[in-house]
Each structure stands twice: as structure tokens, then as C-alpha cells.
Image (cartoon, rainbow, N blue to C red):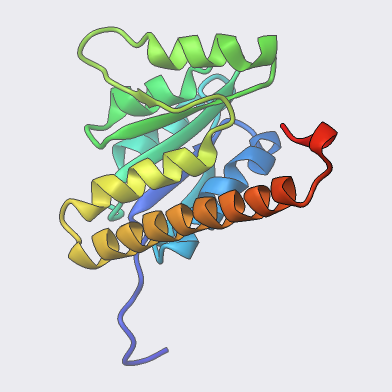
Length: 177
């Protein structure tokens, strides 16, 4: 629309295959819940290496500030992204084989000089939150939204504790934990 500022993505979500989307959707949803625009791409480190290289090399030019890369198996995509950009790269190991341990180790064991942050297996939501924390270093409004999210999470824990305590108080003696 004319007169509205053009929204630009600050986080890039890149997957080796569209089969990674069911895991990565959690990152997409979390970023959008925090008001962070994201760019989505499928670029395989092995099947489309030139596309992966070009996507990573031009990420900063497109306004991206953080990349979240998902991969299973040998999990080369996060490392390939990190090799072609100096933007922070967060790797999401996908549980495609060996329950995701192979992917986690591939991402966490990058050679010196090419860092990739690694979240837990299938940890796309945490990858989005880490990306948001990185962006919040220079975005006070986003920092406020993250603080509010943490407050709501703490409130939810307190509410769950109260429900548990009420359940225990009203349960027969033999059923108490």
C-alpha cells in the first residue's frame, strides 16, 4: 500500500528440504508472534549448492540480520550458510536419523573460525527466540516484547503450580505424589 513503510525481513529461515517445514514452522510462528518479519527459503547444501551460496552471500544485502538454518542427517546447511556470510547463523538439528544426534553433532562441531550456534534437536522455537534476542540488542521495542514473553511464561508456570496444588489437596491420600 502506498504510504506504508515496506516491511523487510530481519531473519532468514532456510531449510534443506520442504520436509523440514513441520519443525521450522515453530520458528516462523514465534518470530511472527514477536513482530519479526522472516524470509523463507529452501536451499540444499548438496542438491543446490550454488543457490545456497548465493542465498547466504546476499542475505545481508536483503536486510537479514540473523539466519536460522535447519538440517538433518549430516546437517551441512548451517555450516554452509556460515561459510558464506558473517551474519550470525543458528543451526536447528532435525531428527531425520539417529534421533537427530548426528545433526546436532554436525552443527555443534564446526571448525574454528566458522561458528554456528546450535539449539536442541527440533528446537526451532528456541532458535527463533535466540534470533530475537540477538536483534533485541539494537531494538529496545523488541527487547520489551521479549521481556513480556518471559513474564507471561513465568505467570503460566505459577498458574500450573496452583492447579497442581489444588489437585493434590483434593485428591485422596493414596493418590498424592
